[in-house]
Image (spheres, rainbow, N blue to C red):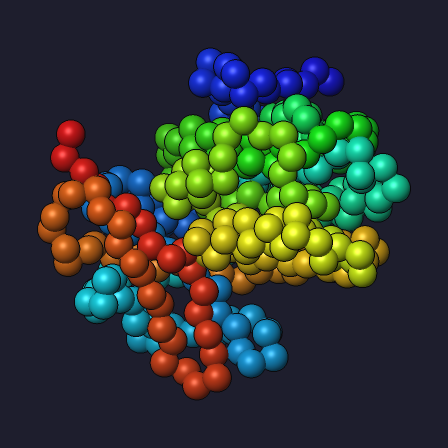
Length: 316
């Protein structure tokens, strides 16, 4: 299996070969595609993937449209689309294979392999391995065997280019364009790292800005062992929390490498437990400004989580 090494000096040219178009499975005739394709039809329609949990952090799955209220910059919006049907996912799996992962890599590989094995039949995923380089081990595919094989190819060594890897993943997911309703997929990044970025050529601010402009939820995982409370780890924790919070994902900080399987399972469960809401903004300005979004749920003792906002359309 050939893989691509992406050097950030030539990112724009290399990324033109991204493969969300490759090996996409046909939709089953018994499983009609969800009608979320309308979200891709016009730039003025805002789509939100919303996770709702109760006080025990269990997913709440029996809500209906009247239970939700959406506010944009404080103004209540009229929700015109709602579904709780599971939508297919295009997923970028980022694995830190820097030298510090040498003793933990086999456990990470096992947890990640189990995770991709649980993906749905119409989900697609890619595998990106990063140390001082960023390597696409597997292009987007629905083949669990190919994904598992790519995960097992990772080898520990080098420094940590976390921002570079996230940048590459967001750019590749950004090229995934639905040509039919059967191709519509939510987008997510699942990023594992064991520490701070030490060698990226792009900055955290650049990556965060791209993430906020994307339609991608970012889930981050970082080990927090007893000796990890250094300044570098605190900075890494801030970075990973920010990427997750701004995009509607979630940050995990397990204390033991053995906890990874459970964390990946939680992410898989969440991706299968979300609501999708859509609305047309009441703000007619096409000024490219940032708009803050808040989703509230009318049921007591529940909380809703989604992306923090979006950039308005801009006249060209």
